[in-house]
Image (cartoon, rainbow, N blue to C red):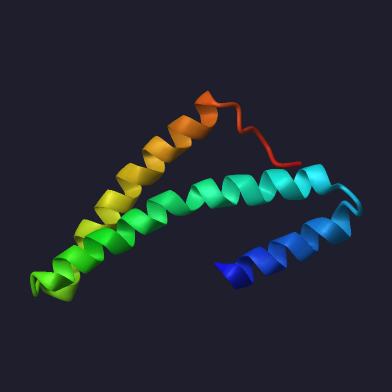
Length: 85
């Protein structure tokens, strides 16, 4: 994620020089976007701790990630996180 963030922030700074409000919005919503990814790793950690097979771990982790991403999307829409630019 830090490398992706570096690339996007550099791109935004190049395309919109001096638009710090845009940079603030991007970093704020990216920070909130980490939540579904954290769910993925929490489930994976839990499953691996129970010695489950990799396909089961990945399936469970992705299902939880998709559910988290769905609710995350609904939350962002509810709070007016429209387009970035």
